[in-house]
Length: 82
Image (tube, rainbow, N blue to C red; front, side):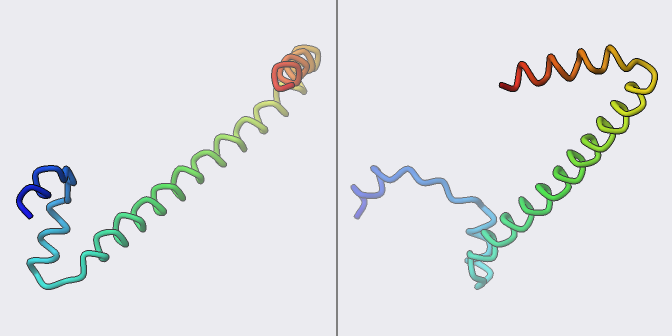
């Protein structure tokens, strides 16, 4: 068994060991990490959506002031996306 332990290189977070010591299920750690990731992902998605809205609004305003330049910009964007 000791030889197997030498070959095994698994890092276990201290939080998991503390949960086990406290008699709790270590799956709680996984659940908490996953929920934290989901929460951060939702916050990031909200920020991304806000910037997309701002970009659209700015393009509308720019198009009213500089229609030719915005058309050229959109042509360049379409060409680079293809």
